[in-house]
Length: 523
Image (cartoon, rainbow, N blue to C red; front, side, top):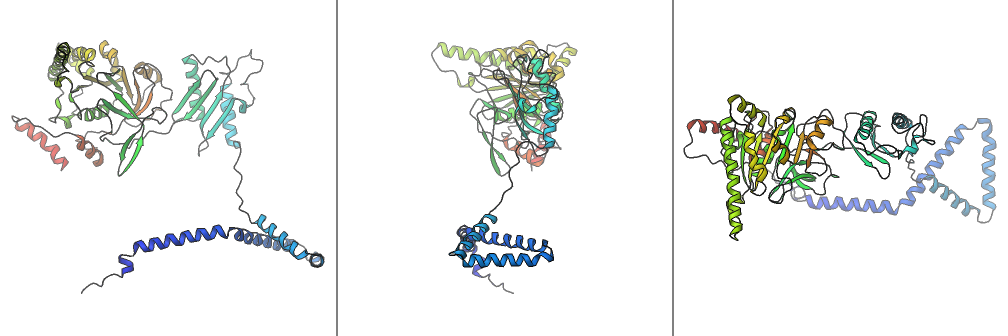
């Protein structure tokens, strides 16, 4: 049976219908604007009539007769007075316009009772820290006025403080870190736990601004970031921390987020990076993200001390010189890296003396990624061999001139195992996962201006590049694509960034079988 064609108005009349609806909507809006005074007066007359009915219903029956006589007398007087009906009509219309106006409830001014109680309790808690017995007119005193000390405040939808400006006496020792830490700890406890606060001390104006920070985005997956050669995105931070944004893809949409960009190369002031964190905090994820970005412009050498195979996806790829998990392979690879650094230095020096540009083989960046060197150090000590970290001294000291970058990652409780050259030359620092304020200050050099929370997502931490400020950091999601727990979207995002696989011609059958499993997972 042949199908009957759809009417033209249904098949190709979508655009005219949409235009007709738009014209009708515009005409209705225009009519509403033109007839707005008439609508207001009509609404007022309706309200006046309703008020009259309520007045008549509330009047006792024995008084309704005199009320009707009084109303009739008023009408008669108005009718006899010259221009009386016209003046009465104008008066009724004005009353109707005034009664029918749109009334908006006035915005509440000042805090409510619950908010006042919060501010008063917070003020009382600060009294022992911001007052001394010798002060003749203390700003903070028990039973004092909190509105003189708190010049500005904001509350969120749940009724908790989200922003507070505190005035404190000039004699408070705001230049001492211990004094500031006590105040920050108290405000964190009294204003509401489970949130991250930023403390801005104005020592000249004797003011402290407390701000609740919004959570950093955790849904940004690994992707090709818009950066220049020598720039590596460590993660993303707050808008107030940096003056730059990067476009990132979030599904089918695109948004701009502020990044923490680490610059390497000959002109870098922080050519090497140290990453510390607890197990499961995302240190390996950060190294994997750095490796995917480094492969765009250079070569990488990966040494994994934990032996968990988290970098198996990089094996045999273009630009990946080696992925070593054993002690013997790690020693051989790091020894080669030291010799390669020396060779680059010698070649570049000879070219300069001859008046020629540096050779091309010395310009391509070389990245050395060393994960868990403490584990390799224990194995080397037990086997009577030298610590693999000792082979990093040449790349660390001369890597900037030779375009060699070293990234070391280890756990917080193993940082004392790191040798002095690693500590001295890795001036770019990242701490991921839960950490105490003392641990953060030990790694970063200075305490952050925020209060770290106990429960943080993987890849969440702090970053400090050299002597710069401490940034909150959220590492882009870069999981192991061969892990069964990895989602399909994140797995495809990582696989799309991996270079082509270049298997050597003399590969054994065992290696081919090992590589066949990941290929099957991709299909």
